[in-house]
Image (tube, rainbow, N blue to C red; front, side):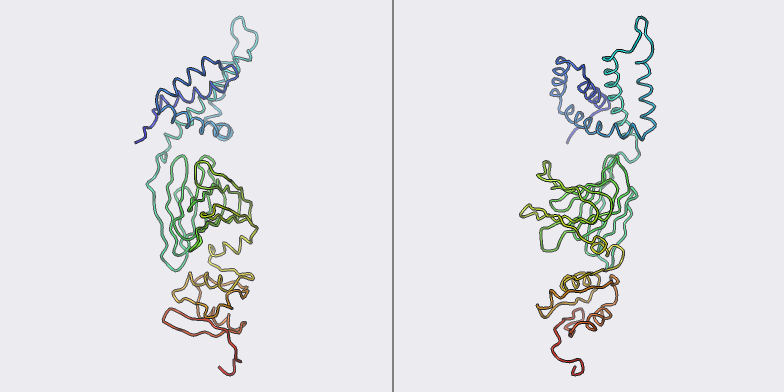
Length: 345
């Protein structure tokens, strides 16, 4: 089991980070740091955490009043007149800045440790076996629209928010929290956002992940330590990643149409009939299937209620297309082309 750095070790790591980034850091100090780092594996862990924390310090200084107060307090001694010194020396300023940075990092750690939600909450699984979407409100204020036959696992902590899409698709409305990135993993893909709205889908029978951005910005990459690629999407873009070939493609889509299910509607625009039926069938126990392969690519347009009356949908479809339907079971209807006039049926 990995040891957790003590408060003393964390402060040491913060001090070392600050000292190493000071302009007057000497080679002797760098050698001493290396000896400290290599003396205990926990030191390596603590210093890596200090580096991550340092990246947030500048932002914290801008938005956290405690940090602002700390900055003023830390810099005041540097500007107090000393006997025999008429002005503040540059090397003293650099040292004060290094001390300030170390103090800020240490305070950041202390703040994280003091937060009531600092520890990672137990991972929670959500599944949707109903015939309609499920709305899930997370403890951080984010909302997940979970589609039918879909499931996710959620783990929230004081440092990050992680969601894994295990099956199906989900639409995420992420509550903004710059100190806790919101990460969604699905198959071999990782999506990172701060505050935005996007959809992640595991395409059925294909080892492919689809990410569609509706609002804000997300960064998509492979879910591994050193990803070979990273794409930042803008609203209206969709990225698909094939885990087998390890290739990804990006295209512009109508995000309103692609994510319409999350608002309870199904919007189609010259969508192949086979894809239309896939969407309609998600929300109905009675499945409509094609008995004629030639119908698969027939373009369909319209705005339908997700989970609406299947028979009503069929009647609308057959009113505009030369189709006929045969009920082959209690929960199955097959569509064929109609080669004779309606009057002869």
